[in-house]
Length: 172
Image 1 (cartoon, rainbow, N blue to C red):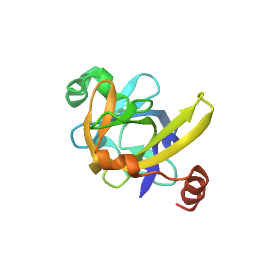
Image 2 (cartoon, rainbow, N blue to C red):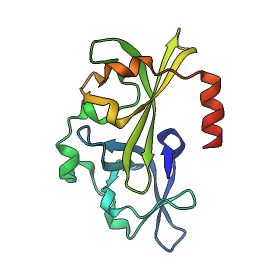
Image 3 (cartoon, one colour):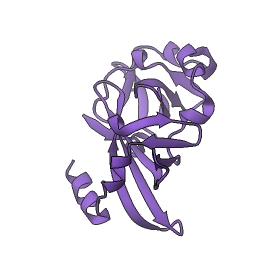
Image 4 (tube, rainbow, N blue to C red):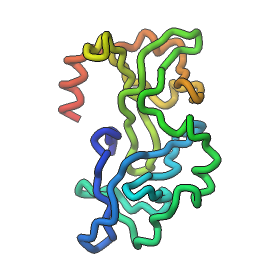
């Protein structure tokens, strides 16, 4: 099941088999090399390792016990990723040849494998008007640097009309 990150922000995290909410999702940190989920950052400046997350069902994430909420610096895998590479939203998207395609506007995750599958890049004019949007597959990404997401040159030709995107996303 595919879910866009902007739809997941604020999702409750509850203890399995109880109604007790222990936090809300704030950020999903992705390994820039393979697109796998490294950590879920939550309210209260806590983190959860993906292996401790239960399935995403009925609009909530579940965990087996409250002890899985830990300080982010206790997650070894998280500490191996430079902080500047952790946040993908807002990063510039450029082709290998240097053409600017916009900024990362949203991220799509496969909720069964907790892996990044797509980026939504948006190019705007004067901050308010969207000129172009592109849905880019994770396989199109060559490299994620501290400044930008570098994609294959062939991605420059992939454009979708803004109205068409709104209709297709509503149906998904």
